Length: 307
Image (cartoon, rainbow, N blue to C red; front, top):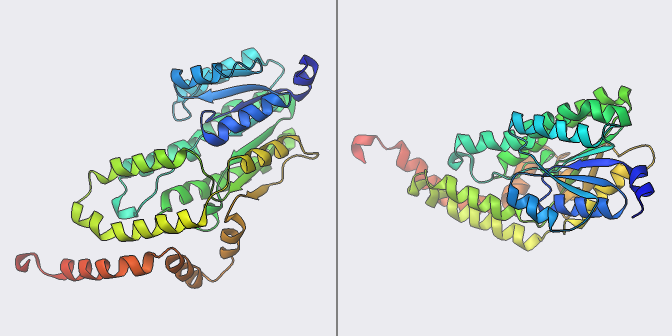
């Protein structure tokens, strides 16, 4: 890509650049004329970005949950792009899932630190730079913000919070010429699910084995249902991000993409009791959880001295 084309596109920061969606966004933007700052948490990830050997991609060490790291990133961006930042893509995120009763409080807190506080901190730090370029901000949300599936409470709650935060950004930054959009994917197949499974396994270690046995059939049923439904490739999200950064007039306020996104969005308009029933039955949770739940209730209703 010619230098003139790169200067025309401008500079963009992509957080979570080592993930399936983030890395896809980094590559696509670099290929289409952007100067890309790829935000990653570790030196190993930075080396992987360097290994791409693309002159338009610069790795930036960034932990979105660390104030000092965010401040260092801001100084690096300001020094490299004194004319301003043309765009910010908040991709960094994690998934904390599982029954609420089994999720450690510190894991729930981490969910919000990464998925909500992180995008807020990064965006806030870069507003002056974005203002100089009348830039654009794209946040990666999830359709679960509209319809929460059982066992996905923490991730859904964080994405609902991010959706509200994005609404505030869109309105407050508009007078400065900064346009903001939210991409809401459905099921996307990336390595984040492996990280989620590892985090869940770690969290369950501190929970009573008897309680895990109660929930396990329902967890297995839910996983089977999601596996049967399938997932889309990260490309559909990458396409939506690039469109939001380049389309005339700025990104759409909310952009649904990926398998199941439209269906889950539709469910959000149904009466709540009907929606709950449809989700619990379609995921196989009602049938799988009821016998063990009834047994547990009877057990816990028995006075301790009689157990």
